[in-house]
Amino acid sequence: MIKLASIGTAIALGIGAFTFASHANALTMKECSAKYKAAQTANSLNGMKWNDFRKSQCGTDAAAAPTAPAAGDAKDEEPTMANTDNAAEPPATTAKAPKGVVFPSKVSAKYASESPGKARMHTCLDQYKANKADNSLGGLTWIKKGGGYYSICNSKLKS
Image (tube, rainbow, N blue to C red):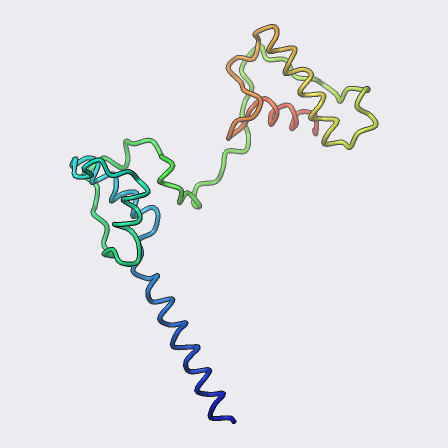
């Protein structure tokens, strides 16, 4: 019985090692993106889209060494959807309001029966709509990554 259990354990470990070893050959999303951009620059994609390229060139069957982009290409380009490996970059948490944009100074009394978060949101939304009607948003949108009107207004009302 002990021999059978140890054989089962050995088989399970062997399968686990094979599974993890096969993923070691796959390129990271960042490496794959660099390889795709290099192929784009060299005009060697032949109409291939990102998802097709990723599946054929960056999967477990693809070579682990990425094609290096030409010098200066990666520094000058804007980040794309393909480059989703931005874990090292902290998200922008504070945004400054453009001049002339009006924010409420306190939570509106008509939202006193709501939770504090909803009361702040509705108060900010009322002022946002008033600013939008007056065309005085200064380019702000309601929600934007890195700080839209709601984010700025909510932090002002919290403090």
